[in-house]
Length: 223
Length: 223
DNA sequence: AATTAATTTGAAATATTTTAAAAACTGCAC
DNA sequence: GTGCAGTTTTTAAAATATTTCAAATTAATT
Image (cartoon, rainbow over all chains, first blue to last red; front, side):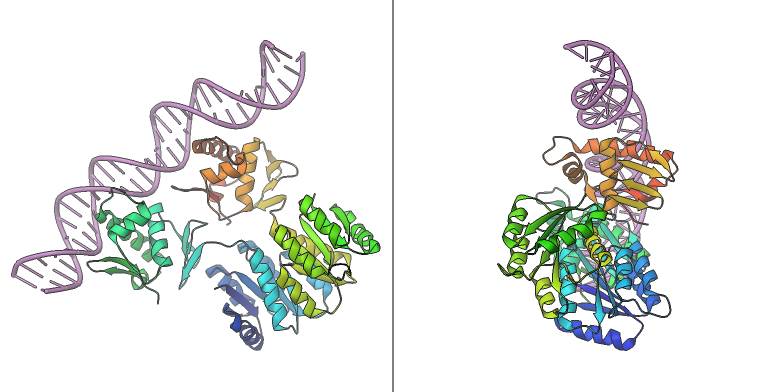
């Protein structure tokens, strides 16, 4: 499910956009105004941003530039019809496309998909703000990076990608260490401990998610 | 220099487009009609295609579909104004953007650049004063030039153009040395060391940007 | 309370990266 | 061709970081 960030200073427009996108199963986050938008950008990872460029507080161009500096996320500008000069300016600043109000549902979705299709797909899972990203080899929570060792990283990745499923110590060794590893089961415990500690430190409620299943092993539970 | 394929069935329109793009140093190939266009696509590699969708011989949609099957090249449709339904259709078929006739030079170029930027890493990247420029084969920091060997130059370029992504030693060898190189992974380390030293010397805080990911490889992080 | 399992702890064993220096190679001028 | 200067690769050591493992402690189960 693709995560979309909607930035507009009109509550009504946010609702409208979200309504349009609902049937397509996008996961929409609504940001009322540029400040809130930028805050979200810093805290979470999005697949695409829809940005209204006519906001009074801080102009859309600044937001566009800021976003580009912080990440590579594709941006679609939402703008009033017939302002070609502005459009060119936006594309120069780093936006990828624009759509003019009033717009129709079909075009909006088509443009979003065209951009998403071209953006490189990554391998990642996200749970309540905790983001596991294989390509970056990073685990982060609200833009705080948690430095993990390779074993810790693989371990939590496996569990997060299969929420609900219990893995015994032996299964974990087979899957993370590789089949026929000589490693003993108790070793897993050490890595689990170290990992839990590191994640606790950044404020993520790891104990609500990463559970010990007594006498069996460990599991990640989806809230 | 970016290679552009223009497909239209009017000689005049081809000339016009080429004329528009001339000052921007694109390398334009003109294809008169869809047949010729598809032939070029099969024979050469282009960075972008401008496709007129109103052609009598074979309709633009088929061409669009064909091109997408043959390659990943970004496509901008050129179309008469106010045919929103058509636009949506095109975006679904694999086009990335459209522009309506009559168009102005600025918008055309802006759209092309936006697409090229996303499709392919550009010819130069800049991070906090450190400038990597492929055309000049130069890395510089605050107007001090850092003399790098070819391997060092490619290495840092690859990493700077994909900030955040981890590259394993083997991936780096495939990408920088070329696939099927016999070079061993440890060799990368040597080049990394030499490069770090050279960049450190001019005062750039390379260690804040160029990170070792223990047990995995190296990555460039965007601050 | 007895039993069993999980967690913590720290130190030893392993693995990886960095450093440094030597060897092999390359393109170029003579 | 030969020799040179610079580049690239290889190699081996020292420096770091991770992984393992076993003993001590704590927690859960019966």
